[in-house]
Length: 228
Length: 228
DNA sequence: CGGAAGCTTCGGCGCCGGCCGAAGCATCCT
DNA sequence: AGGATGCTTCGGCCGGCGCCGAAGCTTCCG
Image (cartoon, rainbow over all chains, first blue to last red; front, top):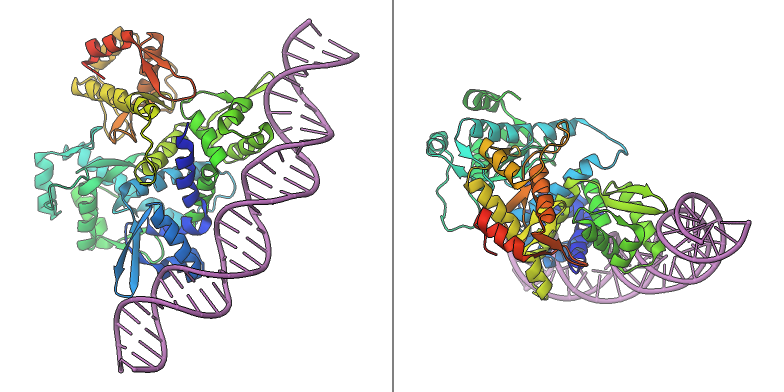
């Protein structure tokens, strides 16, 4: 069982509190500077730099130099999915203390998951789209029906992009609060981006939780029969 | 971002080499004794005992006393899925050394994943069943069609069991070698069990890889048009 | 061109945690 | 009962890693 060592190496990278905070901060798919990540992890810049070097060597994050800043981001959707699956185990494992604070309620309602939407909002959208036959989530990623393509086009969701990308169009991504999948893949990302553009949702400070605006409440209710 | 600490706690449990070997050994869903796990992890019984206590406290494994033995097993399918997703990241992350040994080839062909089948065999079965409309894998787990139920019944797959179980009937489980989902859930487990009973597949020593017997080759080819 | 900002590298300290020997329980066998 | 087996607990050793201060490198600005 030789895969045990690689398993341990990757898990150990996530297993340090500072690095876990860094990864959690990157989980919404944005690219953050080393300084911001140091602040997020509550460690000094030197310490964060060391952690980031290890994460980069382990191919968990990628770095992009831009002027005197260095922007770090998750290395891909597989990493995000791994982190979500670990959180899913962490969520029900420890009976220790269950804060259930206000921010948790917000997280459960709507949050970003890598570059798409999760929480009740995310699974609600996925449910609505599948119930109406706009998307079909199969085992091999899933597809968008003709009616779905028309619906999304009318909504203004940009699905053009380079066709040669390897990323699947649709993917069911497990949601660790709702325990049911939400919509990921290129469609999930484009839909989330469009919701931001429409001003239906807004990011919160220092959290992956999202604020649903009044326009968003109206839009989600009218177009998706979704009341959150 | 308070979830960072819980993330780190769970990941740190997997992050130790000895514990990772233990978890990898349990990944096929069987329950093993503390002694067997100590041997699998190449540590002394005392050391393994400490690790197992931590894994149990972290709710990653469950223990069942039976005589003077203690049988440990993974705490659930969510844990198995987490481990698979970590392996998926570990598989393409390190360009270090790629052994690509013989056992790896066997693992890619057919192996167990928790209590169901993975590898080319696993995804091939899932493909065949969906292509023929025997199962429909949706986002919310999936269903077995009437034709599928009849087909499985004729094959001798026992799907009765207690109806009140929470476990979904079907579920798409990501496959880290094929990078496409295979069939999990109660149906996946029952199908795997039936293949063992039919003598189509056999476990190998010290590995999750499976040997496909001559009867298995014939059966998979005839009933699923699957040539491995 | 100097100074400041952002980030990294280096060096040494300190501590957490894995490891095993020895001992302590529980269970099974005869 | 006596001994063997399986597993756990205790105690102490020791290596590794996270941490930060100081210094060095690159980039931006006036």
